[in-house]
Length: 303
Image (cartoon, rainbow, N blue to C red):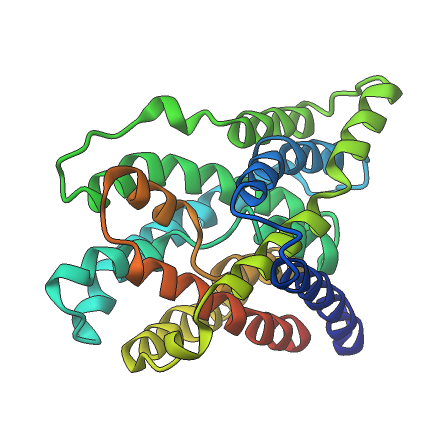
């Protein structure tokens, strides 16, 4: 995809996020309404978009490339886990904040932001790899992530791994692998339900920026050191590594995007539920989200 096209697509996404910013400032979106919309996106629209993408029949990834995507996803998440323990030490994060940086390093916004952005700027073949990444994300978060956040006090919750998003992701992968054909009306239902995903996701992101103290958050020097390593160097190294092993262009661009997405919301939601502090995670989410609009545009333009 050419530079101009990427810039245009990211500009559209930025405008949608701007609409959310405006709606929040005008108080059209409220603390009561945004969690409801978020639940609709995560549990209904996003899963439908995933299935709809597979059902279009336009994905031409081979089974071999699919398995390659599984191996790469697993490798990427193991790398994230390793870096999650190394980076906080290197940039000298206080001990009581290290676990939050560990979570920020590993659990990026591959679903809430990754899926709609990939849908907007990448070819349909890329969605296979995005879906695989989302399955790994949930598998690791509800095992490793839960234990890390609670400092070992909470047990892994395998039941929560099977969220609507993961169930539909696995279903979509089964459809792809066996080349299943579903009735046309099922395809249309999935398409209609999945269509609002990009708009609603970006509106919610814009609203979260409007609610935050961005100017105060961007003053954190150590957070910028984290961003330099995790959101700039890691995507670049990933691109070089995948290029070296002869990965397809779609795979390279997709995993670059998956490595460049901002910090995800799920760790903060879990922290709120368990009474952990959320200030470090909240700051990381907002600054990396704003930064990612620039970095993703640059990465997707030059790769």
